[in-house]
Length: 159
Image 1 (cartoon, one colour):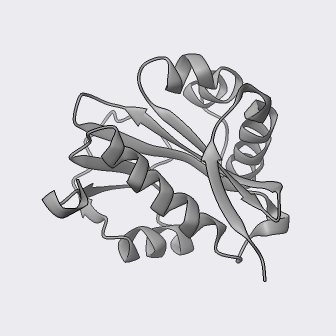
Image 2 (spheres, one colour; image 1 turned 180 degrees about the horizontal axis):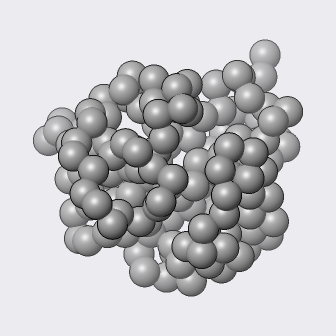
């Protein structure tokens, strides 16, 4: 039985955060300037402004990462989720997603947004399973590669 645990990011996780994300972004798209900043300086880009990064361990090996970027006092952006190729289809993405939702609740969030791309159908399917719903994508949003924006409104019982 495989054992997935999710822990808070520590500085020694930065190479995993960068490499896992760089691998999938470059496989499907291209790195944007915002990606380079977030991936090389996650403490400055995500944690210092009030966000969080979580790391999934599968049988004690770093298997995946996800970040919550603080948008404002009640909204966080679910971003930079990546699972190492060796650990895909083992429940890591769902475990990370559920842990990120829980973390957002502890950060007093009332909603979580995300930007994705519809060609990433397994990811979009997971987001829908978790309760995210599509909302209008405003021109000039953060990522040029995104063609879908989703939001999860956290219900009072989740908070």
